Length: 213
Image 1: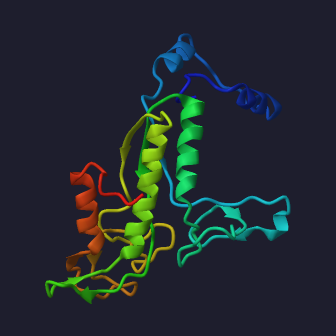
Image 2: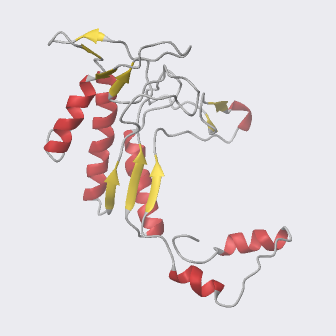
Image 3: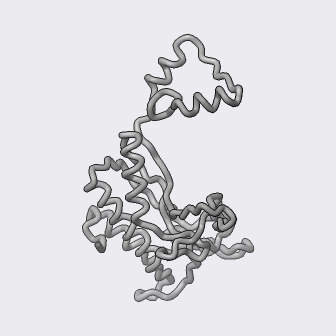
């Protein structure tokens, strides 16, 4: 409805079968048709695999979606399967469906980070796993652009470590800036730039030319 300005027919049928009556005043339908959204935004972290046998479904930690593991994909420590090509598939599907610019507002990998001493003697996190995750997904975003998809933006989740909304853990690190805070509330809250911080800076400054394809 937000994209086309009207309820789809299958929803109208559902309303009718469930005895739901939507009250429209004079001019309401014209207002809906006139004020549609300018773009579609969505979050993408993982893909799930369906099965015709519901009893085999498994609940992924911190995710409301169920499914079965895809044996061809790697997974995070929380069981979220890493599927960069799936992002390209979603971008193509959404653009074909809505014909509106797309904005990837969340994309990232939760991981157990470990502070180490960097080459300059400063503490950092050698998070090559996050760099690979982001690199591979951004490569697929570029592929989608070549497919003719209009992509207006991309933001990863998140810039700085914070409590994971899905599992209520501080130890599930997403950011490219490490925060010294632990699940029990201890820590100094001091910030440290991770290896991924400098990598992502290079990707932005080079307009993605430094992506490994």
